[in-house]
Image 1 (cartoon, rainbow, N blue to C red):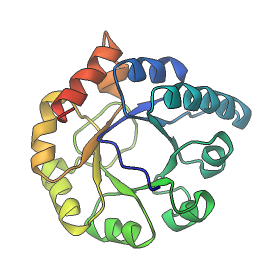
Image 2 (cartoon, rainbow, N blue to C red):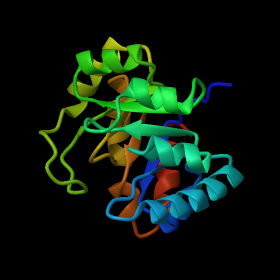
Image 3 (cartoon, rainbow, N blue to C red):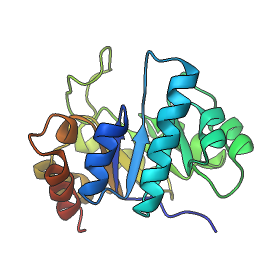
Image 4 (cartoon, helix red, strand yellow):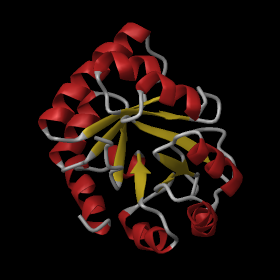
Length: 200
């Protein structure tokens, strides 16, 4: 059975944030752990997968198809400098969630042709979460990509609950967030608020 692409992806750098997001009802946790050994990333991903699957949520591992496969994650998301979508699809098989990053319709169409389950589009808004990002695309950029493909579009960067309606109007299927949850006083409550804005 091919997995459904959730509308909310909470990007987490470890079990603490992942657990808070899951308490708030997050349907997907995207694990992004930088500057750690492979063994440490593997162990953390194993814990997150166990917790997420108890909550009937899915886990997508950023960048690392090998670790996603090893821990039984539900999918992998690749950035512009990571393994191509077609290679990640070969590693994880036909049923896994495979996401590719796109800033323009041409890249999105290529990811779709290569077997992507969804495309992550961004940065949509300015964000301080990640250095060296290109200029924001805005909702208009999301709309161009969404019109070019038949697979779900997940908007990322600078997303807040208040901005979700205009992104849905632009054709986004859902959103991926970091700061909106990680920097919240109550990450679980912030997750629930985002879900409500997405229509549950």
